[in-house]
Image 1 (tube, rainbow, N blue to C red):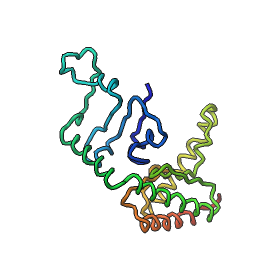
Image 2 (cartoon, rainbow, N blue to C red):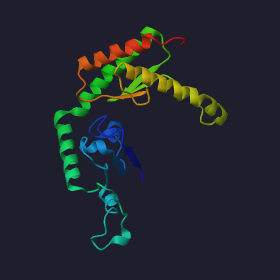
Image 3 (cartoon, rainbow, N blue to C red):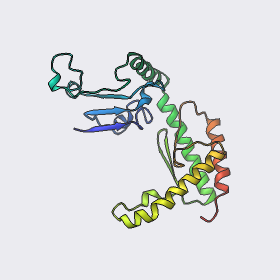
Length: 207
């Protein structure tokens, strides 16, 4: 089976998530609680009729052939309705595309600032998922445990310190290295954020 974990990518790079972005149809897709637009929900799972037929509560008398799936908010009618209408609203407003444009603008601006200050950083994005790599974690050698243990802590500390510096300027990031945009992020908001990043980058020394 091909399973796509779209807890992060679902609706952030398009209505079809990573599956739609890459043109791949998985057997099963797992979505995070964002599927309900912020309303309390466990998440979502979907796939082909053949695969989904194995999910169930056993109420049809075939409990022996079913996979039991449960959770506090699983199949909760209110949560399910919230998910349904949230998806409809995202499609109606073209939210993933608008959020992706904001991500593009933020990424381009970050790269300009990186070049301006001569920093060894990398900014890239997939739609509204924006990465700001500053500690070279992509260079960590997973096959060299000694080197990994030696380098992991200082790289992690650098990310945390930068995250704190961003926060001091009103920029909330994920571990100082990831940012998410939404359709609420107008050009003015993105440009204001970039001005704040500029302030932080101007204080970085010894690079």
